[in-house]
Image (cartoon, rainbow, N blue to C red; front, side):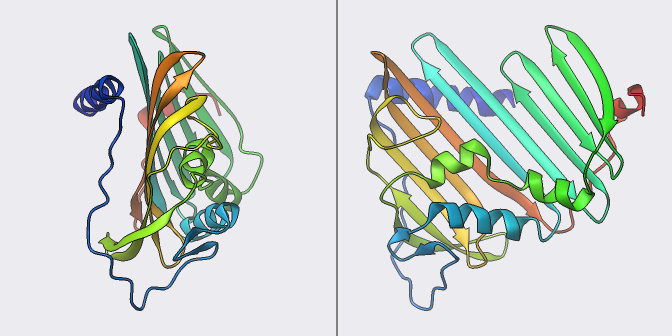
Length: 249
């Protein structure tokens, strides 16, 4: 974690100093025989809402492990957030681990109970409560895109860049290299450069999504690095964490 954060910090500082950002798509543009998922096509994402909904539905068809990372930088400040979610509805277990600025949050769900551990300023609290819904609903709910993925997919002017294979799945890489005053979500108020990449398989699962957005908010230079990745689909085993034993069911 420290190595990854240091690398992201280095990139953030270099980008702020240089006033630019780069995510090189590369590759040759060969798209014969390509099938596009719902809401997507050769001209980009015609319906970002449909792209995100399809991703959630197809991801929740099986067990999954996904990871989100957000790095925010401004002069004199760098903050990093990492969240990993592993879910297996048939096993009846789901685990979320979030490393947030100044605190950590862990959440474990079973068909009956949701356990939560929160650590802030060296104080740790562990509690539990009824799950309040079915495990299938919980599994599908946590497959939702969230603000980070919504921000990346909603970037403007995506075009197909190349085809690729990730974890045995054929994917299409979409690229956006245009700043836009209409960018929304976790980006500077005034975006001056926006580089984004999204890899979608033919069923609609988003395997990778990356964005670097540079700009200013109220005159202060800012940079956002946002990353999403599917780490595994199918065959995910969720272990019961030891800290759950400290919570009263």
